[in-house]
Every structure is written in structure tokens, then in C-alpha cells.
Image 1 (cartoon, rainbow, N blue to C red):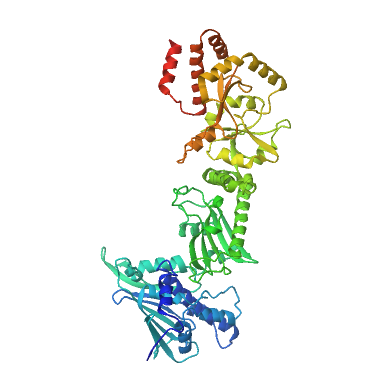
Image 2 (cartoon, rainbow, N blue to C red; image 1 turned 90 degrees about the horizontal axis):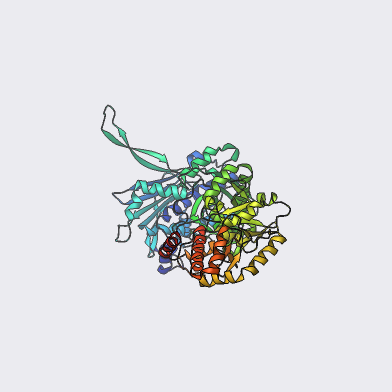
Length: 626
């Protein structure tokens, strides 16, 4: 028995394989189990063309065994095995993949696919093991061979004894270090967790000897430990089963098992595509918003599998940000993976899958809105804000895609309505889609600015979310109808006669309004006659693109730029308060300043804006009362 060097490879390359390619040490078990699954698949494919072979699936399995005292971990399979030559070629040459060669030489059928393609996964064992021993007996051979290596220094191959066809991989697990706990790879519970996480849907049984406690016969409180061989993995993934055989309870159970959430999903979607790119997917629209959804800790993405083996826990590229609430998984045989199978190569297959999933999610949400309105409203109350962010982000790139999914509270319907429903009810003479902004629906209903629009019988959409107005500004118009705030300068519904009267009032009281503007300084852009007020004496409106509500939102942000809306103080000249203003202007300029300050602060309170000097405000009230 002689020590042989790895063919054409240096110690540096093997070190790279062990220390650079794989992010997590636990990956080694996924790789070795995937190789074992490949070995069984090869017998299956041989049986398709070799009549002397029969393939009884019950005879094929993978066994994982740990011996904590000897620090030995075994991964055994009943697969095709390897000859001496194959051991030397496949394990003696780094990045030489026997699976890839087999795949190239055989036409794969019946939905089976060989997992290993790169030939480096086996070497991940050196991340956790000092010594790696492979004992293998090839199908059709009477001889068995042992391959053994301690790493980059080389390997040995020798004749050995093995009764059955297959391969045993024996790892001598490293001792713990200050930075690494290798003991975990000898713990039963940890090995089970890794198998369930990465290899749950390997198509062959993965067995382990599982220890449990059992009450001793005839005893009330004495227990004994028993060891039973159990299958750890599920084998047949739910997404590969016939949809007709599955119930909603099956999908709900999968949601709970995968810990996608502690709620029940509002909607589950099962996708099977066999076209330009083949993939299966199960998607869920959750019922409740996760507690960390709007925190930096939240990670969007779907679980990504390649031929049933977990590749990524969260593949963010499969979901756009505005659908980041969707949970679930995608499994595809057509993905181009990088050499470690931990990450994707960003190729057209991935983009195509993501595009199709995006369309499917939108379609399901539209179906929910149309056919299960109550469920959609429940969903929207949880995740509608995210859809609005989607409309606003990326300079409105996705507004066309998302605008029909938006809902806002209606002043007439007294419930959430869509933009399409609003427009379908608009009278012929109505030019704009009207909206009002405030903290709550109740506060908006009391806004003075809504009076004129409401008196015309026009529906008003209530915006209570801080993103609402920003999103609508990005949409600009819907079905050729522009959006108009009830607080904007021109509502587009004032009668011509009213306009003439307003102009006359402006001219008549020009000096009064200029005096009030002077008293307020740069707090307001102007003081004007109101064309919208009916019963209220005063209100604030805005000129320009920045509304008063937008000012509040922007100035509440950490990088506050002190953005200000161009505020206009509107006065109801039909209100009795206006007569007091005229009298003060004629007889007592100090009293005019007092009244002006009170009216301005009153308008601020109505808008939910803070009063700049509360002490001055209360003193002014006392002056009026005195």
C-alpha cells in the first residue's frame, strides 16, 4: 500500500476547496448524502437498460451512524459502489465528477436527475474530519477497496473486505477548537436537523439509529433508553405530488412544518411548470404580518432546491421587494449552480422563474380580490403598505403592475375600495379622483377641506398611511383621471359665479389679507378667501408639490431636511368670525394680530400639526376671554 498524490493538484487547491468554497461546515453532510443518492440513482438507470438488473426501491437506502466515543461518523449507501479505478479517478482527482460523467453517458428519464456535477462536494468532509475513509464495492464486482486520506498530503488505496455492494464513508471527526465545535456533528439531534434541513426530500430513505426513552415494563417511574432505526427524511416532497391528491390541510401542514409562520396561510399556490425551464413551487400568502417585517432583520426570499436538495434558505432574487411577504419554496433541475452548490449563477433560468412567479402572485392576489373579498381585505390590512411602497419605489417602475391591487377607505362606501371601483362610480361631470389625508378616517371626516367636495356628492378616498400620498403622486392618474387632494389650491369644481364672487372678495379685502400675512410672516405663503369652506371659519391648504401631510412625513424621518409645504391660510368670508376680523382691521391692529394668530394655530390643530408656541396660544385665548 503506497501513498499517492492527488493528480495535478496542489495542497493550496485542496485548502481552497475546504476553507473557501463552503460557507457553513454543516454543508458536508448534505454533499455526502447527495453523493450517496447519486450512487443509488446510477443503479436505477442501469436497471433501465440492463435486463439482468432489477430495481426494488425498498432495498436502497442511506444510513447515517455516529459513535461519539470514537468520534466516528459514517454515511453508508447501498448504491452502485466504486471500483479501484473509479476510486482513484473520482476521489484522486479534485473536481473530477463521476456523476457528471455518468450523466453525460446516459439519458436520464422518469424525472430523476443526478445531483452531483462538480466533484468537489466529497472534499467538504475534510472541513470536519481529520481522516476520511471510503470503503466501496462496485456493482458486479467481487472485490472491495478502501480509499483513505488525511488531506492534501495524498491518499492510499488498498484491498479490503465488504459484503454488500455500496459505499461507506467513515469520518474521524476533528477535536474541538476555540473557534469551532465539531462535537455537534456527532450529536443525534444535530445530525437529524441537518438532514431535515438540506436532504429532507432526497428520494431514498435516510436512516439513523434514534434513541428514545421508554417506561420500563412493570414500573411507574423508571425509564430505559431504547435505540430504534428510523427514517429521518420525508423522501417524496409535497410539490412533486399530484395536486388532486392534496388537500388544503396538506398545504397548511407543510407551511407549519417548514416554519414559514405561526399563522395559517390565507392562500396557497402550487405550481408545476415543464417548459423552457422546469420547476415546481409552493407559495403562500400569509395571514399575519411577521413581527420583524419592517425591521432590518427581516429577510425576504423563497427556499431554493435543486433536485430536492436545499441550496438556499432565502433566495431573494426570486421575489420582488413588493411581494416580499410571500413564503414558500422553488425546486428546479435546470438551475446553473456555482461549484459549491451553495449559490446560484445569475442566469436566464433564474430570471425566468422569478418572472413567472411574480406574474403568478399578482394573478392569485387579483383572484383573491375578485372572488374572496374578505380574505383580500384581511391580506391588505397586513401587507397593503408593502404594495404601496412597491408603487413608490424605483421611480414608479412597477405602478402599472400594482395599482389595481391598491385599496383605500371610501367616504361613501365606508369601506376599502379599489381605484377601479371608484372610477366606475364617478359622475360624468367629475374631473378628478379626490382624496383627503389624515391620521385616521374619523379625523379626515371632520376636515373642513372636505366640505365642498362632499357637498357635490363626490366620493373621497381617505389616506391614513404615511406612504399613501407619495404612492399616488407617483401614479399621477388612473384611467386618465388625475388625483386631486381636497387641500389643493384648485379643486376644479367651483362654479364660475363662485369664482367671480371670490375674486371680488379678494379685491375688497386685499389690505386685510396683506395685514394678516404680515402678522404671520413666513409661516404662510398667502392668506386668501376660501372657495371650499362652508361651516368652518379657517383651514390650511398647500400650493406646490409638497402637501402638508408630506411635510409631516418627511420631517419625521431621521435625515430630516426641514422640508416645508407652501401653506395658505384660507378664510371663510361667510363665517361670523370674518366680521370680527374686519372690525379689528378697521379699529384695532393689535387685536387683528391676536385673531390672526389664533386662527392660524386653530388651522394647525385641525391639520394635526404642532403649535409652535403653546404658551403664547393659551395666553392669547385668555386675552380673548378677558
